[in-house]
Length: 189
Length: 274
Image 1 (tube, rainbow over the protein chains, first blue to last red):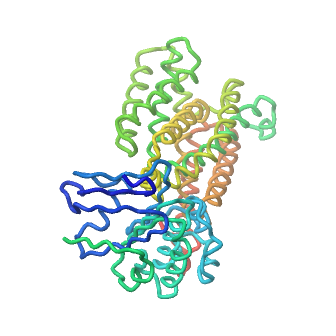
Image 2: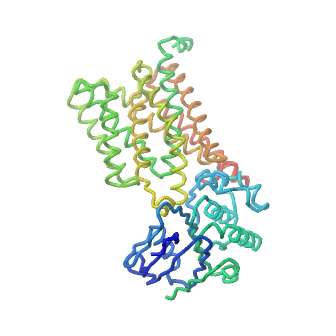
Image 3: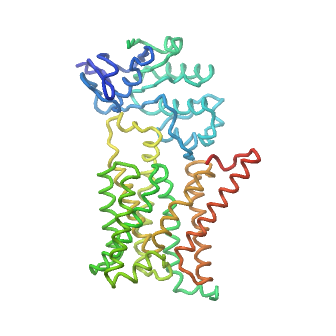
């Protein structure tokens, strides 16, 4: 076992009713940003869900170092359903630092989340996970609905955070992954 | 009745008791709505009524019977359905059936039963106020700590699980808080009065609140306005308090909905989405 690793995934086969992804093995240390690639249905989101504990592990193991804090940005939109939560309150929930937000979204942090556009909401959701005081960040298609300025800001933020964090990032945007990843994990169907 | 009689010392006790629950219940309603469990309020209110009657039959204070039954029900509900409305629906119909059967068969329960279903706030005493005061202290101490956890789990459902943390403890604490609140409130404002204070202010506040904190404040203001208006109105027209409160709350809900419809037809959205 790699004692310095925050996360060790060994021969993992995971899914829901049946295995969808695996077997797959890798380890994550501080400073690692693993870009996860694969076609639709390859099990990229399932891999993240298995690490987060919400998918079934059929064989192999996921070992998280004790005390490691994890945030998981899921591809699905926030389950708002008319909940009157503001952006500032959302960020406070995860303990995310709002100071690094780009200028274009700062004036919106006081607004209700259900009054924001899809892209603005997506960015706020990512930021709540990305800037939370955690050790391991799991991001699932963070660039969806985000405009080029937002994507650029995400790249800068991930790069500035990467020495002190470990990240696992799924994206179909290969240019984005190329700019942020220190390693790549290819999943096949 | 002369309205000046309202300021008689004998009415101050019920007024204060009701003010406590009119402040606390809408806040609990906001979090129940957040968890999509607003039906819990009605379920616990029905179980509280049955518990109060059972307590009286056994020679215990009604509040003790109500607390024992609702807290047991909360624990039972947590066991059969971690969250969700199925467990609450079962509790509701069971509580209702038990209360009606006790009313029908035990003469000693009849007077209290009418008070519980009519919401006879004017006949509450020192014990009701004392229990309400203790509950106020408990909610003030616990809810700020609980709030972030409940909101966090709603917005990021696997946040705790992903870090290997357990969420069941704070779910149980919240369930017990709601159960206690409804048990005590039902004894003062009645079954449907308590449910109305949980359900209606939070429903309106969800639409017009500018933020979570703002919506909490809005729900309390709506609840207090409705409560005070009902307190005066029920006294003036000499009617049971519970139904008057429910009608005032329903009127407010319809008024809020009409304003929302008018704003929408003008292309504005000051009240949010339905």
